[in-house]
Image (cartoon, rainbow over the protein chains, first blue to last red):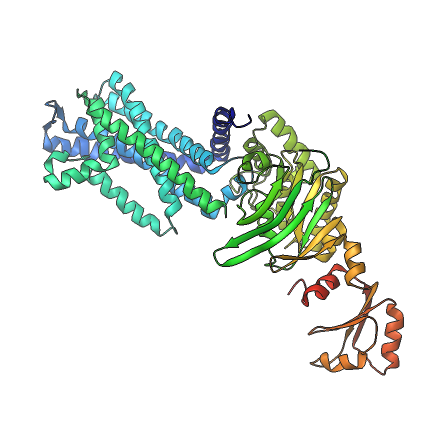
Length: 268
Length: 310
């Protein structure tokens, strides 16, 4: 039977094809790109310094729902890590991906090869994660240096940040297939900023009225902040499992949706 | 697949976009080693057909087998053995000329070392070695097209699909592309191309189909088609004044057929010079006279009543 060994084979060759897409991005890496990388890293650091430490001096310590008492900077830092993982993944999978698909027509050439939309999506996402991972690692180093978390917790927080990146990368890719023009990016930017402000980043979600709090707790950035904060301040309990399950499901669902949308846009 | 089975086989192939039927039930067979052409004006359904053969556009109806495989179910397997030169160059603007080839090779799973060797050979073949480290944007149209052709060959394909390979190129660039394609043909590569240039079809194609409005209106070798639908020679007459029509009546009985176009009159004859003499004998004094061989343009005109390039 020809059909039987195919799934395993498809897994290996599919991963290889996805790697070829990421490899293409590595080849295309030119000097200008480093500027983008630096700015993506600087932003959360500036927020951490100005709000976490600056405003933190006025706010004082916070008591978390689990009972732990932490400095405001230690409260804000994990949220900055989560949102930098989000914005790094989003900018790679929306701006860059949209530009490649609609303006550079890059994938029109790629689909004429054995590479399939799902493999393109996975390759681009993997690449976005390489970038997001770099941001996260650098940011965690700063957190450890500023004594906002321990080295051991930072090691656990790193894969959590990568998972956050995957979820937002897949989400961004789906959004990119729905965007009609560059103007739509303004809408996306507003949505992203709203998430950034209200996902328990600067204020604990418990501070909101119950209805708003429920809404906030459903958003992907809240789940990300909750997960990473839990790891960084060393909260006990099993609620991180819910965050991980949420983010894994978001990644899988969005990846499937993005590749389906791509197939419809490319295979005319 | 067995030997002698056609590489591409379409029966009643249909492509619809909403209410619009781009390809309206065509039958095509392409055999190994031949250069096969789709000739027709813009909008005839040539590109839609090519995209279906390239397994990047699912057929809306009919049957299509490529290399004995199903283009939808076995898409990646078929595409691995095809080389595609699309109508619009889809080169990677962020990569150099050489990287465009090596990166594309990686999409086919070709090892890096082999990809580098292959890129060097192909750059040489399309005469772009000197521009290897250049980005794509500054290249001329002809160079971009040659690079796209080189890219289509990177996986050593069994069939090369070329969608209007020389449209938009200046005459010199076109001849360079034709010469390269002719070399490929001599190497035994199966070529499938679309064109609305009759000279391109005549030079490159062993066999072709003439398409119009999504249908095939004729099929055969360029020579056979010309013999069947045109005459050995054609006289083109241009009369001064607004209307060529006024002179048509005076040309009755000259040759097998008279075709009146907005800017000229065509006489289908076996002996052009004799016909020109007869035109003068009837007291007509056209501003321009041209005697030429019958061509695929005449075939198309005869079959559809329209010219290939509007």
